[in-house]
Amino acid sequence: MSADLPFIGQRAAWQEWLAALASERMHHAWLFSGGKGLGKAAFARTAAAELVRTPCDARPDPEKHPDIHVLEHLPANDDEAKKKAEGKPYQTKRNISVDQVREMIRRLATKPTMGDRRAIIIDPADDMEKSAVNALLKALEEPPAGTYFLLLAHQPGRLLPTIRSRCRVLRFAALDEHELDEAIRRDLPHADGETRRAAIAASHGAPGVALSFVEHDLGQIHDLMMRILDQGDAEYHLRGRLAEEMGTRPARERQLATLELARTALANALAAASPARQKRLIEAHGTLTRLSTQAPTYNFEAGLLIMEIGGLLASTAMPREAVR
Image (cartoon, rainbow, N blue to C red):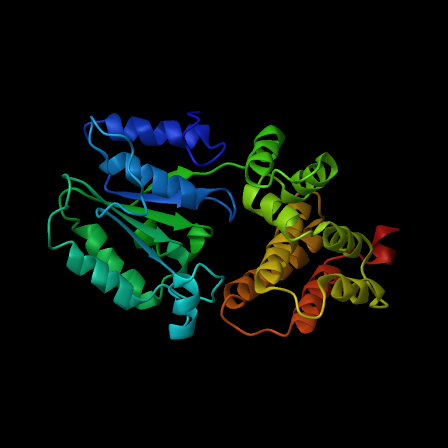
């Protein structure tokens, strides 16, 4: 893996991308598929830069190149747009809208600016409005020459089969412990060895989860989550401690990181669970996924949200009589 790449791991995916670029028939639509936090966003932007670069030039900055267009969640309102412009955390709209897709399609009427290739990144494609998906489908059916679509999907099953069938799938794998440690050391060099080990164990291969674990100091929260998953919380004591650990006014980013950590814990518990418990785990995971999509834009009360997370975890614990 080249040292100048901004992502860690995903060697197989990167080699597959480079081989496709070198082929005579590059597919026009790609679906970058894998769980949240695996580095798909950084990979997609680097892949797009590699796509539009000219043979004699260095890989361009994907944030500045006129032939790389990114469709993502817009700020929720004008005030949030000001925060974004100032480099501050900001709330976003729930979905990628049909207006964003239509504006992108209008741009496709012109040729690429600096070469003969153009990249359209949709991040994430599984958050598009239904009408936006239908508009995109028309573009995928008749793509202009030199235009390539890179769709990121945390949950590809949410996309229409007609969208998936028109894309070549590039799958993203979980990172191993060495790669996760490298990611933490690179992005959060202040983290000590014990913290890194705890983050790696909690992340189950997702660097985004590992980095959030360190950045938002989620060690105690994770320990309480695992206890609830293991033994339940009939007396609500563990949920009360979970709320205390979260705090009365946590940053939105910490709440989102906690939601993702809980989803990861549920997903990891699935393999060793009985069929009855698997059903409960899947139901709880689905509810947490819905909360995760709402949390960036809904003004959830922090105490109620963490109690809801704790309740969902407790609902999956094996009853004591079943354990016996």
